Length: 278
Image 1 (cartoon, rainbow, N blue to C red):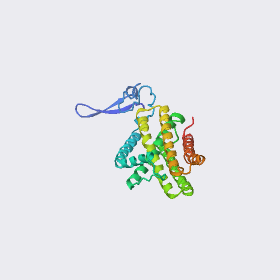
Image 2 (cartoon, one colour; image 1 turned 180 degrees about the vertical axis):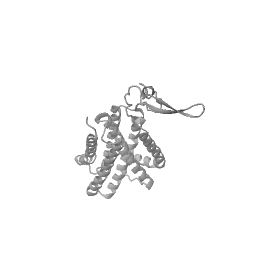
Image 3 (cartoon, rainbow, N blue to C red; image 1 turned 45 degrees about the horizontal axis):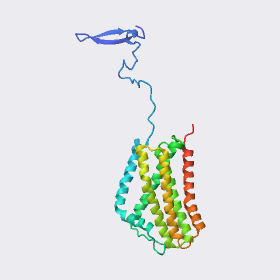
């Protein structure tokens, strides 16, 4: 018997086993190893692979869930501090004779403003992430795109913390404690206003994929409005009695405009460093 032959045992009708030798040529054929002939073998995919679906924020469940969670928290918090916001808006219109406008704050209202600072940092990080995907690159050395948002979030939080420290040092040197405390409250309120104004455009961008041009126009308008609000509060608190045009512009540019430019440059350098160059 040849080595290519195989021995099988068949049981006849009586129950006895009979030895049967089947040659190799009968047991194997052209389709013997084909996946269609053997159901236990994996056949793989048929056809040609198509182009992958491009990444969009509206299909990102993590970003959508995060924005929805922030929206729910904002609505709940706003329902408790709406009177505080109305008092702050009132101080923008009516000023006391001494040039100050003290607004008392409870612990809940302070926590609400700190939450809006965190929300504003997250919104700025997501907006710059949109910009990075459209302008700088869409592939990075990071394992997850969420890590890039976390890095941007850390840089924006450091920016706000650094501004807070710089304001505290400068105001304690050139102004009295009452005006410095009032400015600190106004600074938090300006960030809170910025977060409330940026939230709609982030949601619209994530849900309906707005064009980058429209998002940038809206962001620039909000940024100019917040900076004008900050400039007005700076004038009322510090420079209303002694109007020195050069001094107020130096103060505002050094502590508001220059830090924004540094933040933009830091975010851009970070995105360029982490992108994959082909």
